[in-house]
Figure 1 (cartoon, rainbow, N blue to C red):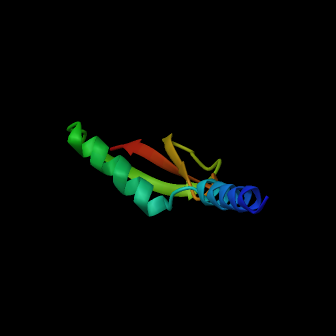
Figure 2: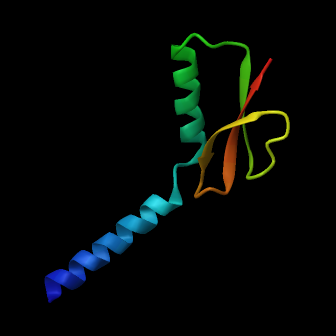
Length: 74
C-alpha cells in the first residue's frame, strides 16, 4: 500500500512539472538555433501574451501555455 501511495505521489509531482512548460527564453533559444541551422535569416522572434500574435506566426508556446513565441520576417 505504501508503494502505491508513493508511486501516485511521484506521478502527481511529475505531472505538475510537465504542466509548467518550458521557460520562454529557453524555448526561444531552441527555435532560434533551429532556424539558424536551416540557414534562415532576416527574422525576429518575440515573446508575447497568448492571443497577441498580431502580425506574426505562432511558432511555440511556453510557461504553461500563457505565452507564445511569434516569428516575424524582416
